[in-house]
Image (cartoon, rainbow, N blue to C red; front, top):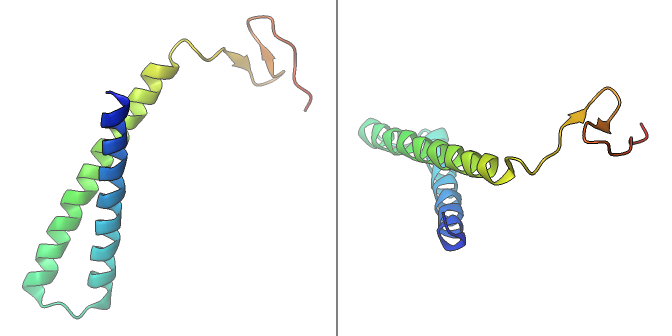
Length: 89
């Protein structure tokens, strides 16, 4: 994914989250007719799935980008297994 596509993905995710928040507010008020409440709930489920997919895609991208770049650290001693120095606790 290019940087431009990533930025568009973030904007899309942010907009989906904003829309989802608005739906939650409307549903929590409890003044929608049942048919409209169901319609809004269905839209909320769709937005939730879209957000989950976007987050999973971002997580996979981060894993690919960081693969091989992070050195292994022994949490007991906080020493790099590649011979780096230890960190004070």
